[in-house]
Image (cartoon, rainbow, N blue to C red; front, side, top):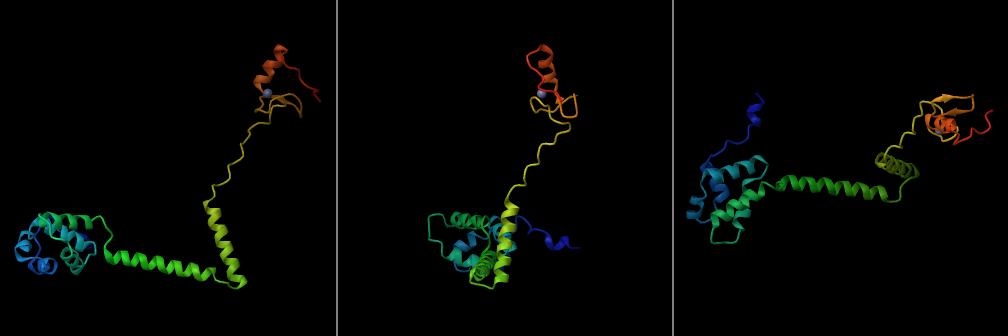
Length: 181
Ligand SMILES: [Zn+2]
C-alpha cells in the first residue's frame, strides 16, 4: 500500500490547469501556452515532488530576464533546479547549522568546571576517533635470531636461537657464533 504514495510523478504528463496557472500565471499568455507541454510538465512535477512550492517556481520564472528563446530559458531554469536543494530544505539545513553554531558558541563561553571538563573530554574523544588506531606490533611467532633479529628456526640454547640464513653463514664460516651460553 505504501508504494502508492512513493510513486514518482508520472512521466510525460502535462500539468493540470490549476498547477499550470499557479506556476506560469505571470508569464505572457502566449508563452504560458507554449509551456503547457509534457516536457515542461514533467520538470515541474518532479520539482514539486522534491518539495518546491508552486509560488517559488512562479517567482523565479517571473524574475527570468526576457530572451530570444523564453521556452528554452524557462526549461533550462527548471532543469537546473533539479540539481539544487529545494529552498525549504535548504532553509531547514541552514537553520540546523545556525543552531549548531549557537550551541557551539554557548559551549565556548566561560562555563562551570564541570561543563568545561565535559567539553574537553568531548574534544579528546573526537580527536581520538580521528586518529588512526595504533599499528599492531609485529607478531613474532618464534623468538628472534640471536645474530640478526629475524625470526629464528633453530633452537641452540635457551638464550640463543638462529635463523636459516645465519645457520648458513655459520656453516660456511662467514660468521662466528658469539659466546654461546
Ligand atoms: Zn639470523
